Image (cartoon, helix red, strand yellow):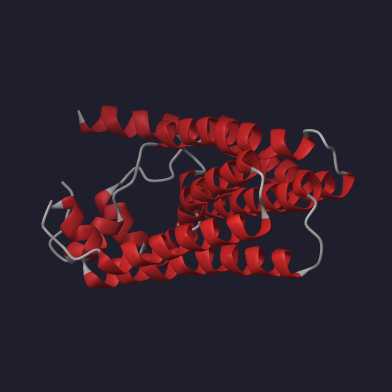
Amino acid sequence: MIKQQNMDSNTLSYLKFQTPEMNKKNIIVFFIILLYFTGIIPIIGEPFSYSFFMAAIIPIALISIWAIVYVIDPYKNEKSYYLFFGIYGIVNTYVFFLVVVKLLYVNIGVEGTKPFVLWLMLFIALLVGVNILNVRALNSGTYDKLQKKKSLNMSWAMIGALGYIVGQFILSFIYSDDAVSTLLIVLVSLLALLTSYFSVYIHRYYFIHKNIELVKQVYPNFSLPKSERNTRKKKLK
């Protein structure tokens, strides 16, 4: 029987995990759609740039090789999956940054370092911002309230997201008079909101590591090989 009486509701709300099989499916789906299709294709598309290709392909190759571990055995590697997925979020956001910068410099023909610096600051602010909001949501009980479907004030999160989106629109219209390129930049930047959120899994990994005994109370089979989970289930029967 799971003993949860010693856990506060905020901690429990942060220990709502998907199954290892779902983790595996997340990797396959997000890698194909976000990293490969939306990330690699614009990088290798015409006009081709060797510099942007090399800047993107190395982290993509490394994170793809690492992903094999969780596709092969998502059960035994359930704990480290959260560290992996958080780093994947950073890598995918970085690739989206390269896509935007390539559209600006190679496709549109923007010159100078100012646009690069401005977009870099915007993407860094996005990654830092979502992680600050994640910790704030945990400490303020927001995750607990969301799971209990209670009403809550999300204005701080909305302001942050709106500021990022408005910033992307303003910079896109300043540096681009190409409607198609501007639309692509904005769409990729919006997808970066999702991939940047994945980076909060790094904090969740360290939270799990710090509270592993509590995790084992809620999920006794956590990070065990699939064969041992089946054996334990049979014993319980």
